[in-house]
Image 1 (spheres, rainbow, N blue to C red):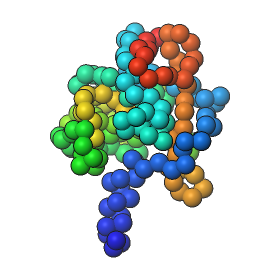
Image 2: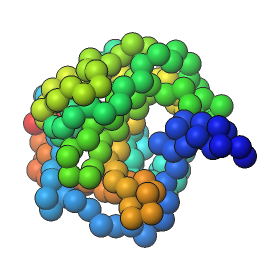
Image 3: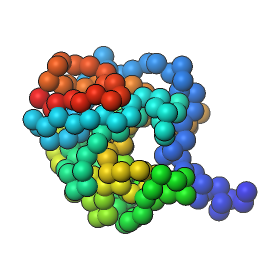
Length: 189
């Protein structure tokens, strides 16, 4: 692969590549508890959780079932470091991996939150914006590798070799502070 091809690979596919995560059970949840990334008072289904069978193999990521256009809120405050919102394609095929609209927020401590599958022009923020926990940041959609409208959410950091590692987190819910499980509905308190 030539240098240009390698750069394209790293830029477009690195958000989907995770390394050594099956046994990676360290969590920052003792330090940070996240807010559910949807509207207060609403109850939402978690369609796929950590190490899910469809697209979360070896990954700590969460899929919240949100209808197209539903607002997404910052689960934790920070600085917006990336916004992609020009794609209008999606489907349950890997050919759509590079077509997912997304927003990435840096928390300033080496961790990042990623919000994926946003609708076309669905960002409510721009690069370098500062957001607080609970600020509206985007609108749900189904762009990229996606079978229906939802929010793919994950928190990650880079290890000493520069590889991205996702890790489990805990959330404030109407039932207390918990780690979320697949196929359950959670209410934002």
